[in-house]
Each structure stands twice: as C-alpha cells, then as structure tokens.
Length: 344
Image (cartoon, rainbow, N blue to C red; front, side, top):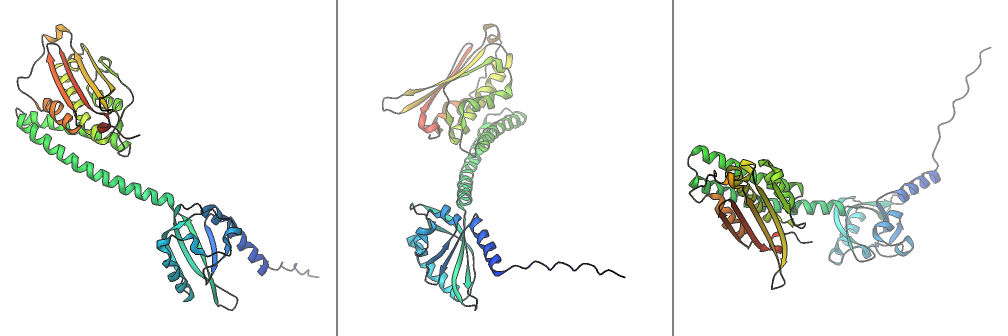
C-alpha cells in the first residue's frame, strides 16, 4: 500500500505585529537619526541615533516642533518641505545644517518621505539624517589645500623663471647652463616633496638640511645642531635653495668635494629687543690647510651668492652675510622667527 509523503510545512507568515516589531528594531538600531513628524512639524518619534546626534532625549524631543533643530536662517525651509510632503512628494537627499541641544551646528544629509495611514492619507513625514560633518570638513580641507597648492605652484613658477634667467646670464656655455638648471630645479623638487608629505603644512629645519645635503655625500663631515623648528612652506622653499647652493659650492670647491675638513650648521632662537624672536642660523665650513691651498676660487659672482646673500634673506624679511677668508666659509642668516615658522 503506497504511503503518502508528509505534508509540506506551511510557509511562515509575518503578522502585522511581527512586521511592526521588526521595523521598530531596525529604526532603533540605525546609525542614522530617524525622526517622524506630523503635518504641523511636531515630532512624534525619535530614535536612539537622533538622541546621539542632536543631544535631546526622546522625552525632550517628542511633542516639540522640529524647527528647534533648524538654524534661524533656514526656518523657511521647513514650510517648503511640509508643502511638498502634503503633495505626496519624496524629498530627495540634500545637505544642510542642523542645531544640536548645546547650540553647536552639525552638517547633515537629509532624506524626507511622506507617512500615510491605513487609508493612504498623508499624516506626516519621516526624516532620515546622516551626520556628514567629517566629510564636509574633509571637503573644506581639500579646497583649502588646493588653494594653497595653487598659490605655491604659482610661486614656484616665478622662482623657476628667475632661476632660468639668472643661470643663463651667468653660465659659461650651454652645457653648464643645462647642468646648473637641472640641479636647481631638482633642489626645488626636493623641497616640494617635503611639503607634499606634510600636506603643505611645512617641514622641520633639521629634515630640510638633511634632505638637501644628503645628495652630496660625506655626511660624516657635517654637524647639525639646533632646537626643533618647523618651517612654513615659504621658508622651506627658500632655505632649501640656500642649502642647495651652499652644498653645491662645497661639492665643487670645499669640504664636500675633498672630504677634508668640517661643516657645522647651527641655529638658535634669540629674544629681540621688541619682544619678538629671531632665528639665527650659521653655516660654517672649514677646510684643512693642505686642501685649501688647492681650492679653485671662482672669479665671478655666481647665482649661488645672489641666492644666499639677497634672495633668501629678502624672502624671509631677514639679513644675511657670506664671508670667505682663506680656508673658512661662513654664511649667517638672521630672520624673524614668526616669519619663518608655522604657528603652534
């Protein structure tokens, strides 16, 4: 006798109570603020995320007008929103400002939809608010950075044009011009790399010196000392040029060419008479006598001398001097500390 297969279990069905409980759980656990209001803009429900976002508890918010969250200059927006909801329109996501309980403002993305009763009549609206403060801050920072980069790039163009002109005027021939121009633009590029790595916020003086002198070798012949100083982008660019020119001169005629002698680079911060601070930086390069006798001394004033004596101090509102006496080369720079450094 054949045996009938067991009857299939009926598919589970969701009761209205179960569906309502499930939706309530979703709303309550959401990371977005979910608020409902009636057509008079009175708050009817308020989830946990709304409490975290705006600072009001559900007991404080329910029964009050949603306009308590809207800045004074945006109050008219609520009238427009209610009119659109009454027409059955869903208000697509838009970005705006809202006010917290403590009076601070918050950037939010809002989506607003009509709420209908069982008969299909519109009785209110649901609002989903997402905190986009961090995203807006990132956008503002990017815009600020782009403006800064644009400004700095224009300055770089001006500096490069000046380098081309001055190098051309002083170069003995095309090959020398090409080599000097390449080296100077690469030096600018090294300073640029430091600024990019810090989002154009600056670089430490110690890091800048290491970055520019490291390409010449003989690091054991260089002593660097001074307090921690964070240079602003303008100082990074111009002091980088000075370090390159001093290093290049040394690599041709001095310690970095022969590996004999010592270079010391030291700086200190002094209090000036007017209560301002001065950054005093000194490059001191001393060759051993036996090497100094064989040094080649250029007979003409080069672009490097112009940079360290005029261009750099002028750009930093300071004064500089370059002295050559026998086997000793000294370059000193004194400039306002605040003109060269990043504010704390």
